[in-house]
Length: 216
Image (tube, rainbow, N blue to C red; front, side, top):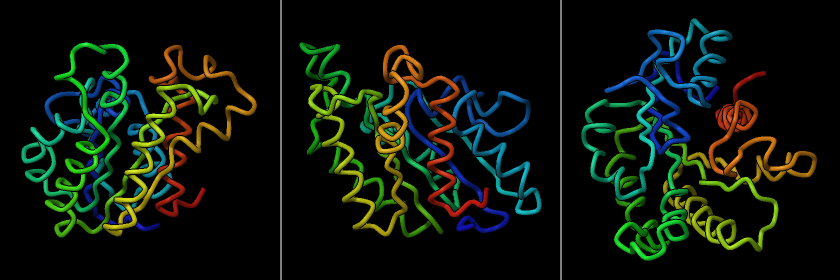
């Protein structure tokens, strides 16, 4: 497995990462301290199967966040925690606000702003890390011509490009959902096509664990 023993893994993002985690810093203290989503599942697999590795998982997701929100709290919620490994999944709100708050342009994050802000955060942090994982935002919708899905694919392409440029591990979460959408309707995983149920979070956890060479 790529994550070394005794590593601290910080996972940051929006509500999909948050999942009602404990505040202010979420670590595995009780059954739901890490929230009820993929972060908790990742921790559960690592702890149950490789307890000797003593990997410390911290959830710093906050619902509603865009990449601009991450930038505003990056020092306290990432740099001050001194992670060995960092996982970032952000972008759905950057796109979603352009649809559900169409006239409130101050809440919008263009794809150029998204890429520039995310790269600044990466450049600030990458030299201090043993490993960086960049996960794409996703929309649980098989129709690639859907306007929101189409735009999110553009933001996901930015994540792919940044991962290659900065020697980060890339997780194509959209592809993980696309693979199962050949058999399942989006409603089977998320009523709003954004916030996954446990099945969707299991897909995210598996996608993350696969890229770090976790042995199933």
